Every structure is written in structure tokens, then in C-alpha cells.
Length: 220
Image 1 (cartoon, rainbow, N blue to C red):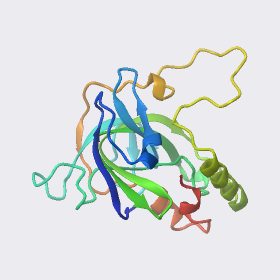
Image 2 (spheres, rainbow, N blue to C red):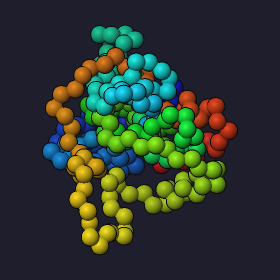
Image 3 (cartoon, rainbow, N blue to C red):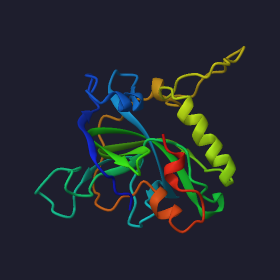
């Protein structure tokens, strides 16, 4: 399980008021079509029907859910800085060389409700959130070590807000599918509540058995 280091922020997302965050975390905020501020984050899971199974195992979670701590139910709401409850995700979509044939799915998620931000391996942010909405599902590509390092360097030198366009717009833009990016993201009104105590962002469990460059090299 990914465990963060120092707690750097404790805030509430999913409201129409922009959360007050340290400057280095503001780039991970994005607004839904209805004007709500959420955190744009990334994780790995195995897809099974309509559910997503954490790499640590368990019954899985649907595309949209609110977390409840099952370790000490009723004592605190999820997430809590003193516990491991809540949905886990990381600040970067860069994958640490995970093999594409192991059934991993790369998820882009919107985090809302109470959100905790922790330093992670000195190079990124580990989020733990009350609510998680899966926005996009992709298969991770297989990269060698040199490619990973090069992509990490490029990402560190060219930071931009989630969903910003690149500097080469299409001549004739095609219609954009609904909810394909932060600008068109719209959270459901309600969602199920699930006991979540051992969720994992995916990188830690999967990369621990692979002889690849450290995951910290590819986080922003």
C-alpha cells in the first residue's frame, strides 16, 4: 500500500469555492461543468465488470463512491490523517514501467469531499479522498527505463494545468465526447457509500516486484 510522508494539506473539494492550497498543489485542481472544484488524480486498478479492484485485493469499488472507514467505524470520517482509510490516488499519470499484459487499468479520477495531500517519495503527492469518481480508463503502455526517465524530465519542465490544450490545435476540431476532460466533467448527484480501508493507488504494490526505475522518478 502507498503510504505518504508528511501531510501537506487537508481541505474540502467538490464545492463552488476554490480550496486554499499550497501553490505547488493548485495545478491539480480543476472545475466541473457545474462550477465545482475537484482534484484531478491518477491510479491503477484491475477492472472486473463494473467494478475496479485495488491491487491490494478486496471486493472493489464502482466508478463513483464515497468512502467510509471500516477499521474503526463510527470513530472518524474517511479520510483521517491517523488512518489509511479513503480512496488513494497520485498526482501524476506517469506509470513506472508496468507491463501492459498484467491486467492493469490506468484510471483518471476526480477526488472530492475531504481530501488529504501527503508528500510521496519526495517527488509527488499521494492523495486520500472521501469521494472518488472514475473519469477515464486507459491501458498503461510498456516503456523502458530510458523512456521513463526522459518522460519524467519533460513532465517536470513542462507543467501545465489538467486538461489544458497543447500548443498545436487541430485545424478542424472534432466534437469532444461528454466528460472527456475536466472542462466537461460533471459529478453525479449521489453515490454509494463503501467501507474503504486498504485502497491503494497501485504504483507501490505493482512496482515493488518489478526491476524498474523507482516510481519517484516519474512523478510530478
